[in-house]
Image 1: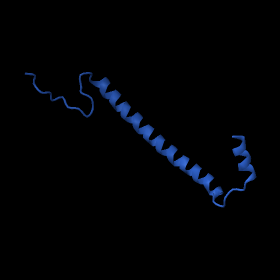
Image 2: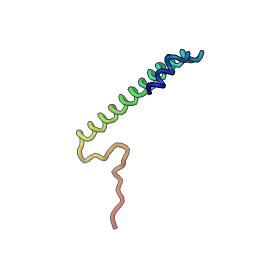
Image 3: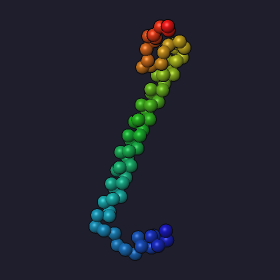
Image 4: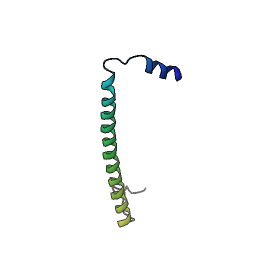
Amino acid sequence: MVLTATEALLRPSPPWGPSLWPTAWATTAVLLSGWIGLRLKQKHVQQQISRADDADPDAPAPGTSNAYGQAA
């Protein structure tokens, strides 16, 4: 690790090197924004399921039907 740090300090960076830092920060911002959006959506769905469970304990889970087949 020390050798890599020394090499990074002594060897000049390539001409495209300075453009990597803004690109990395922009990518981080985009990914973080996407994660926040998905997390908010997940919390919204969980709240809806929780409200549905509190309203009627005998109600089926969202996305399921209560049409059951008759046992033989």
